[in-house]
Image 1 (spheres, helix red, strand yellow):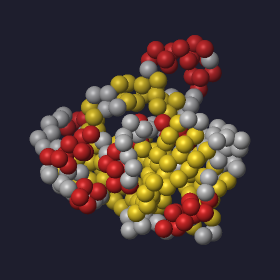
Image 2 (cartoon, helix red, strand yellow):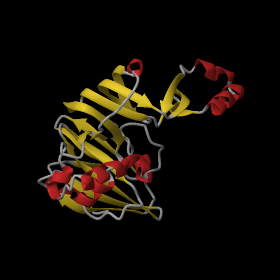
Image 3 (cartoon, one colour):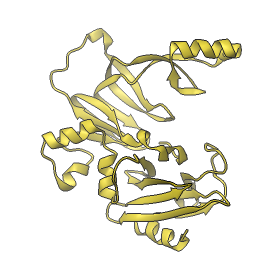
Length: 268
């Protein structure tokens, strides 16, 4: 691994990178590659933890200094993973790019991270070039990893309108707070700290049968993968508050489809 190459490429986008032998945060198993965003007296930096006695190749495929983004390629144990590293509003971030996407540039990585519904809305609005990657355009509004696509003629029962609702991904992180929200469909699951993605009723009963103490794990019944619609203010500690005039459907970016995300400790 060419450390000088990495230092130079990260410096091009105004970032620092440090190579470490063990992760600062113990969110990942030891002996594996891990990527994180950490802070010291000089501010935020990217932390790359490389396992010892393991063949590893890390290189930057593309860097865009004006956008403050770069595309990182990691070859490990015969597998190839790509990560989009960059700056979004107030902080640095890391997003794993789905392996099925043929990506070799920052621009392609950004497109691969958009859900199909957003790309369809872009085509419908005939967006091209830089307009596609603006946080706010005719097709959608983006805040962090969430996209909000305008919806016309949404009808629902007023008593199902929710106020001040959290929006978060299943693996945790700080929630985005929605002023007005409507959820529909989805699957009812049991959620706790040990099962943040939720388990079905059958799986829940099996867990209790195997371990009776599991009943005290502060379970909550939630809806998994519902249709989510929002209007009004959407707030997050690390992003500018956005205001949605009219109803918008919510879609998360595709980083959850990437096997590479198992190596990323950073959560917003």
